[in-house]
Length: 131
Ligand SMILES: O=C(CO)COP(=O)(O)O
Image 1 (tube, rainbow, N blue to C red):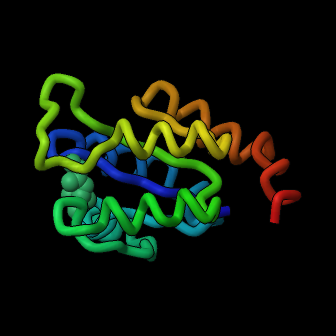
Image 2: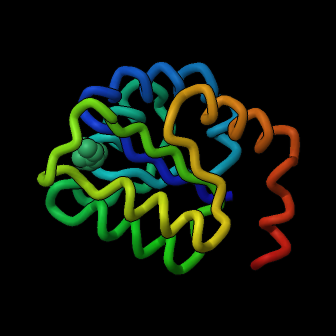
């Protein structure tokens, strides 16, 4: 399955730790991420990540296009609710689009852990029937 990941700068270490912890599950899937998030994940896990441009220069739009094509099966958006900034990718818009297409989306690590463990257990296999 195709997993999409975006992490705000203040959440980069959190996403690194998450990806290290669940590296064995991620390795069985395709990971897509905005530029810096993807590079950081590659550096700490050694996994290959399909990298978009950096979020602030268009990577967020590339990510959104993939959601709109329903090509992502699960999305992790670690934004910082205390630091909403107009220059940052519009995570609210991406989350709304995920809801429109019924794509499982996690905006915090507690939910992300549920999703990744559910993915490993086959709970998201229904998405395979959409293709
Ligand atoms: O800017 C982002 C989230 O704030 C995401 O883009 P990068 O992964 O390129 O940092």
